[in-house]
Each structure stands twice: as C-alpha cells, then as structure tokens.
Length: 317
Ligand code: UDP
Ligand code: MG
Image (tube, rainbow, N blue to C red):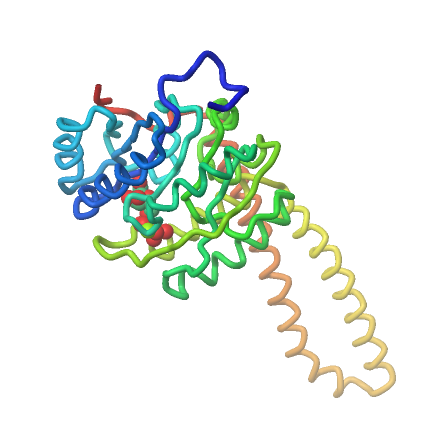
C-alpha cells in the first residue's frame, strides 16, 4: 500500500481503541466500525485496549472476538488512562496505517475512509477536527486555550489537538513507540515525527451512552501533562514575567517614596493597601512558578524511577 512500508505488513489498517467502562457502546461500535472498514476493501484489524474496565466491557469484547478474528483485545490489569491504552494498542498494531478512535462513538467510524484518503495523498498524519463539537462549554473552553497554547509551544499549528480520531502512517507510529516517556500525549508526540500533517473536519456526536471519563480534575492533569511534556516555554515565560514584575515593584516603591516627599506621610499611608495588592501579585506569581518547577521535578522523578507504564494482563489471539 504505502510505498515506503517494509516487507508487506499483514494488514493495511489497524484501528486502535481505548475502552474504559464502555459496555453499552461496544456492540454498536463494532457494528458501525466493521461496516465502515469493510467498505474500504482493505485488510484491517481492530485492537481494543481495555483500560481496566470494571463493567462488562471485556465480556462483550470477548464475545465479539469469538465471531470476528479481526478483532483483538489487550487487557490492562487496572486503569492507566486513555493515552497509556492507546500506546499499548499502537504497540500491538501491525497495519501500514493506524487509526485511533474513541470507543464512545463520539467520533463516527464512518469518517475513517476520509482520513485514509488523505493518507493516500501522502500525509504522514491526518487529524480529525471536530467541526461542531458536541460537548459542554466546560469541556470546550479549556480546550480552546490548550489548542492555542500547544500550537504555539510545539510549533505545529493544529486546530484540534483533543480529537482522537486520527490516522498515522507506520513510520510515525514506530517513532512514537520508541519514546519511553511516562505520560505522553499521543497527538502532540506524533507531530514531532511527521513530515506532513493535515487536518480534516469530521463530525462529532454527543455521547449517547455511558458517562464521560473526564471530570475537571482529570482534564486539568492531562493539560498540565501536555504543556510541561512538550516544552520548557511555561517556565521561561514565568521567569521573564518575574523579572518584569520585580522591576515594576521597584518603580512603584520609588514612586511611593517620591510622593511621600512631595505630599507628606499621610498620603503615603493610604498606599499601604496598594502595597498589599502588590504583595499578593508577587505571592501569586511565586506560587505559580513553584508549582511549575514542582511539575518538572515530579516528571523527572517519574522518569528516573522508570517504572513500566502499564501492565498487560492478557492479549487475545
Ligand atoms: N478512556 C480510557 N481510559 C480512561 C478514560 C477514558 O481508555 O481512563 C477511553 C474511553 O473509554 C473513550 C476515550 O478514552 O474511549 C475517551 O474518553 P471519554 O469519552 O470519556 O472522553 P471525552 O469524550 O469526554 O473527552
Ligand atoms: Mg467521549
């Protein structure tokens, strides 16, 4: 298929899907995905990675595997998070092209042929861009900022980093797999290794069954990961900001001193409250800076420990 691919891979397309408590979605997912892939006429495999589900997802998947040898299961022993799951799926994948997808049908499988068409045009990565995103404002507003920020920090301008409906060429997947970082945000990581990246608009649906696995807390952690994982820009920005604020503080102090000389001590006494305000700004910045430094140190610690990222209990077939 792709001219650069080494010795004919056993399948053309691998579809990797992280699954965490999605029992109500598995059946329809398999039905719609198979129909969409069948239509492409290519050889494919579907790799479902169970991220420690506590519902009957695994049971459902096992039943599907019984009837469809193209579906494979990677089962984690506990919940390690969506990106660890995708990683494990990539590790098992054999296709010349790998497509990632959410299990909850928010990314319609029917869009996959569009991604593949773009890959055939020669792109290394094709990202989906949720044209009309069907999520709550609480999810969309932070995402907007993250997209802007990541585009800047990583130098790859994409409009939608959060969309997991994406297609990668084998060469990119192999590079991703060589990265041993503890927490990696796959779409951004992938961009570092691609020669050409493009985005196409894809449909996005509301989650109809089951609950979103991301509360605000989890989302924040993911975004922190994303920002510190891919650049040192935040810490550098904070340093520059610190210098500017310190200079402002000195200027302000001089100003207060001069005013005291001109207007007398009563005027300056009123400035006490302003000083409080200034103090709080300082403290705020310091805390932020310390938090960021802590974030980096924490990551170094995690990296140094070098623990396995996840433990697989079982791989089917
Ligand atoms: N997911 C996972 N492990 C987790 C959380 C989520 O494998 O710890 C999977 C989940 O089953 C789904 C995908 O990641 O297939 C996206 O999760 P979700 O739909 O909850 O996220 P949202 O659409 O709200 O961003
Ligand atoms: Mg979802």
